[in-house]
Amino acid sequence: MADTETNIFFFADREALVLSGGGARGAYQVGVLKAIAEWLPANVPCPFEVLVGTSAGALNAAALAAGAANLQEAVRTLERVWENFTVDQVIRVDNLTMIRGALQWLISLLSAGWMVRSPRSLLDNSPLRDLIARTIPLEQIRKSIVDGPIHALAVATTSYSTGQAVAFFEALPSLQEWNRVSRAGVRRAIDLDVLMASAAIPFIFPATSVDGRHYGDGSMRQLAPLSPAVHLGANRVLVIGTRGQPAPLAREQADVPPSLGHLLGFVLDALFTDGLSIDLERLRQVNRLLQLGFPGRAQGWRPFETCVIEPSVDPTALARQHERALPRSLRALLRTMGAMEARGGLLLSYLLFEGIYTRELIALGYADAQRHRDEVERLLGPRAGSGAAPSDRPQRPA
Image (cartoon, rainbow, N blue to C red; front, top):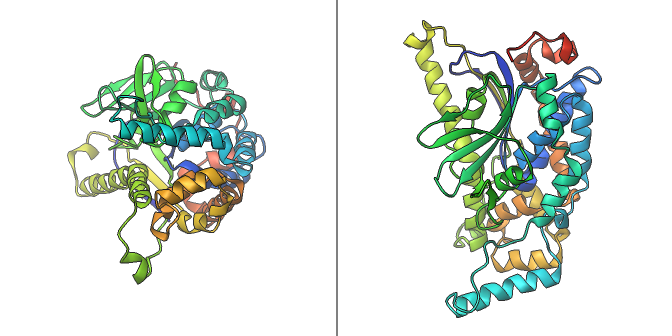
């Protein structure tokens, strides 16, 4: 699905890339980025001046920011990682770890938490921290901002202390922090702790401590996913989502009550995508007000143009075809939760970090991007074909 239109206001004039959460579905974003990189001249820097990511999208955004001087090379690095993914690069799935975790849950339940405290998460995602450290040179993010390919990188998290949606960001000095009732922007270096916090899917992965406070997946309280891009000065935004249109269940499947696995997958689907859908609809409504002569137009508010690309094929259906690619231990856990049933495939589609599945998502993203090339190039404007080096771009305020 693609949707291009003029939306709201704001005064800067920058292009932004917003990458939503989605677990293993983040591979789809790499396919879209691969297509965009091919349309641009060789060795061109990142054409998006503001990068915003949540959960898996935050990892992709950080990799782009670190390699912003050369978009094609940054995307090739992402593609190599996602094409060759295995679950054990993200989750500890050896038999001993899985058995120990199951026993801890059981003993904690039977003893009401007196003998053993309950685990802090269903799965251990410590291998993901090692993967990020190996593949993303986070120290290069600051250099990318200072040298000019990008203005800012924002990573969405949720504070378990305040309940706020907190966007940690690195940016030019002229860009300021913000604080609203339910969301805030905090200037801070984007490091491993911030990225692990953004990807800490509730219940499934443990919360992460950042500066002494615990944070979780940025999707949980993300009522306005486009807000960080707006606060950081963007008025043209490409959004790459991960939700596809689900195929209707057969009658016999629909009559079966939802399992725990289906309910958890349903919650994740709502976390990762509902906020984005609501925010886009809000922008459409404001746009209609502007068209009717809302006073903001007279005040010089700039239009906020969006292009949204999402899977044309439901990733859940693709995931069901490859469920046996999962390690046996994880497959047994998901089967116990009902996540291997037809109605439980949603959860599977977010946790199937296996190359046989992620390669299909990359191919799908690539094909979907080709169908909407005109919208993307119109959004990027002159940047889509210039290939200008950072030093050739207009000077920006320090």
